[in-house]
Amino acid sequence: MRKLIALFMLAGILFAPVIANAQDADTAAQEEPTPVAVEPAASPAIVDDEIVEEELSFHQVVKEKFIEGDPLYMTPVLICLILGLAVALERIITLNLSTTNTKKLLTKVEDALESGGVEAAKDVTKNTKGPVASIFTQGLMRYSEGIEMVEKSIISYGSVEMGRLEKGLVWISLFISLAPMLGFMGTVIGMIGAFDSIEAAGDISPSLVAGGIKIALLTTVAGLIVAIILQLFYNYCVAKIDSLVNDMEDASITLVDILVKHKLTGK
Image: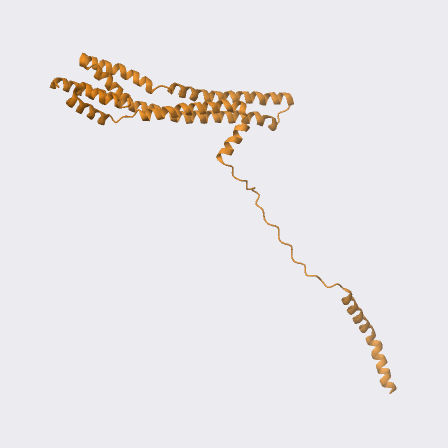
């Protein structure tokens, strides 16, 4: 019995530190806060270096550049564009209305001469619009004076009609030349302002020079754009006038031949 008690005592002495350590560990484990599950932070969105800007409309871009180029220098260029386009559109409408189907008109005149004589032919030409019909009327009015007078009348009145067709082209040509000049004037003034800023600051700074150079470049570009636009309209008008003049010349020659034939037949 004593041996058994001694064995228990020895076992208690040997395992006491282990039990104490285990109890301390359990206590520490109970005292430690329960770890909270932390959700991983969302990875930051990758943003491109390029900033996407809202696209501006064409009207807004033009308005912005107009203001940046200084309205004081851009306004005269804009006036040239407006006036030039107004004259060009008026000429285009007038020239298109002056176009006549010369073959059809010649056929009507020839039929009228055969059926009702010169007076019937004059009625046909007077009721037809266009420079060709006007030339025919002047030629028929001189029929009684002979074929030579008819030819002279056609040539003289043809020059008058050609002058009417070319009316207004000189203004378009003026604005074509004036717009770039005004743009270059803005360029020179802008550069002068840039050098004045440099002189006043006593140092060459890009920010000082940029403003003057920007005005210079924008006014120059505006003037060149206006000149290019008006030049296209001008060339169209010139080509249209050349076409009408060729039609007048061909139709006039044919009219003289018809009158000679009519006179020979004695109708």
